[in-house]
Length: 60
Image (tube, rainbow, N blue to C red):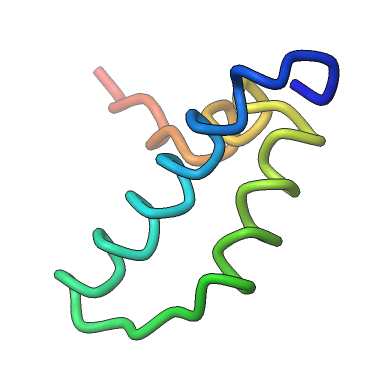
């Protein structure tokens, strides 16, 4: 992401989307906090986030 200047608009869109989704759910979030959250998710990897946020499998 840091080597491609074209990804800056994608990065800004992700931050804007995070702020908008939080606002819709009644959670006011500052752009600086949203930036930190997005950078953290990109650093640890989206697959790790998805792995730990999936619901447990239903018992049969």
